[in-house]
Amino acid sequence: MKARTRTHAAAGVLLTPFFVLFTLVMVVPIGYAVWLSLFTEKQSGLGFGGKETVFSGLANYAAALGDPAFREGFVVLLGYCVFYIPLMIGGALALALLLDSTLARARRFFQLALFLPHAVPGIIAALIWVYLYTPQLSPVVDAMEAGGIGFDFFAPEGALPSVINIALWEWLGYNMVIFYAALQAVDRSVLEAATVDGAGAWRIALSIKVPLIRASVVMVALFTVIGSLQLFTEPLIINKGTGSSVTSTWTPNMYAYTAAFDRNDYGLAAAASVLLALTAALLSFAVTRFTGRKGKKA
Figure 1 (cartoon, one colour):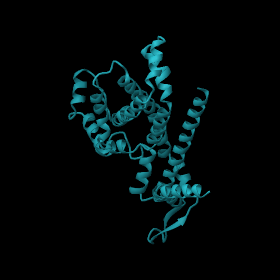
Figure 2: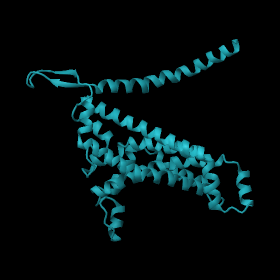
Figure 3: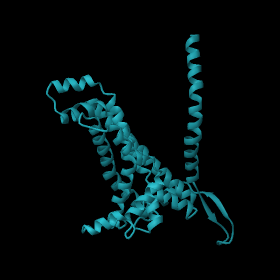
Figure 4: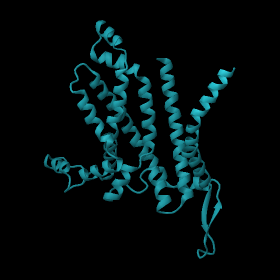
């Protein structure tokens, strides 16, 4: 009994720093955002008096949901997720499988080359690509025009592919490293047995390697979904740097940022942030449930 008590005490001591930090950096900010979303500032005295904070209940949530700009931001986010998530997971997995294949050469070089873009801060990466997207400045655009290919990266039809390209450039190598590390842990005797049984490279990759690293695929998919909903830096830089079709409310995160720092409406910004957080939580739950059912069937 004493040994069990000592074990529980040791576990409590070791876990306490985590729970303290989790409370300070997660629970408290979320709680404050929820609290802030229930209030709004009103100016008394026909606009000549000072501002006062009053309880507004769910009015900020209704204002956010009733704003077409906020709803259109979710439409943009949906289009982004539909294209970005499959390209990210599929591309990273394909690269990892290629590096893990027996035909791969110079693995270390390609791992480093593919991972290096992730080491570039998001703001710097966005600035680099804004330069590469800008006509009369970009050698890429000049080469495309010389080849008879005309494409405006800042036009309404080009803004979403432009942002997706930047995000892929930043994160593809990072997720590839995760998949490659998982593939390195696969028991080689299983692969050798499949080869002896006559399985080809494609069969081994799709029917043996991918199912064996399913946990890593699920983890990357979950983090990619959450990261996609937090889309902010890349479109913000494109908006600030070029005045393109990417507006200041292009995504829900940008809508909340604009409400807080351009309009000084912190209650509306908090409500928009809470709604986005609830959406992320629901999608994360859906991904885990869906992948859990797939795993049981497998």
